[in-house]
Image (tube, rainbow over all chains, first blue to last red; front, top):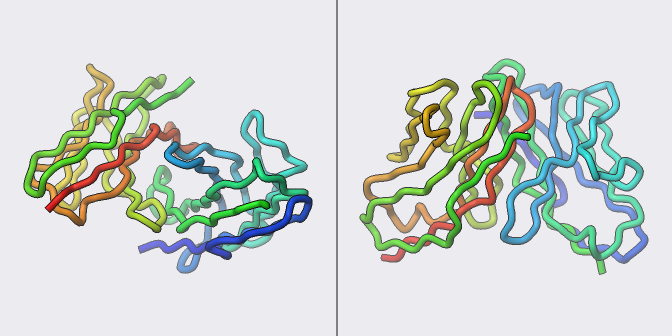
Length: 117
Length: 111
């Protein structure tokens, strides 16, 4: 089946630094990828939709300049948390849509745990 | 806007017990409905889905029927196992657009 990977699986950084998280579709080309944030014991909240070769579409309330998304190829999207602060600590999850499959099915990565000290 | 409401957990059951996790939704039109499962330390996996009214999605002994009249998509399993312990998310999507998730329900199965 379709596999999506994320790297790193966890990261700890100091306040004020930037962190990049990678999301890769391993066995299919993903024209659309999604970035979610999951707080402890809560659901996933969509942050942005990333389309290959174009600017990401951010959900209301998500700061574009803080969460930079780049989808430069059909198998890779990156999320950069700029000038991270402790409140950015969270579990970040990406997903990808396989264009050869069902239009409404997304495949999820294992997530990245970000801790900002 | 679209929303999904699912029963709060945690739900604690003994092995071989019957499972129901309730899920209702609010959406215009005819959304596709999903159940995702998140095992400890892993990412979300699609468990089952249904794309139109009266469709039944099934997988690994789990079932859910798309009920348009009650706007529900309750998840059921006749006999749970310890390995079913996980967090279950109900979700909807309209026209292949973004997924809207419920809050998730923790299931704990004791041997």
